[in-house]
Length: 130
Image (cartoon, rainbow, N blue to C red; front, side, top):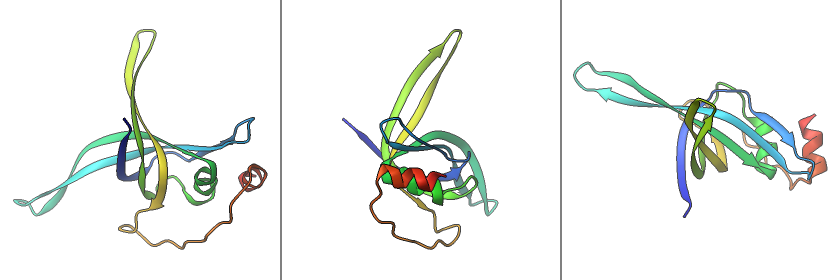
């Protein structure tokens, strides 16, 4: 079973872009998503806990992330959720990852201009990365 998730948050790291030896473009970055609640008594918004996600995009989505998404921007992500436990020596933790199906700017926080890109080959994606 695949868990699908849609989440909004802040791009916390500069997106990393690479092309594998097989020609597969991959982009990844960390996303911080902080829950906010409205306190009716004080009339103010309160910041809650921050959840951290590793976002990974493949193929044309990765190439478009490379030229469109920057650290500090607010985005909306839709994709498949993966939660994995890990251990390394005495350390252990949980990694929460989202394999993105779609990424866009959150227009609650600003404006964006959309430019449609033609279908890209791996060679074109590599040229865009440079």
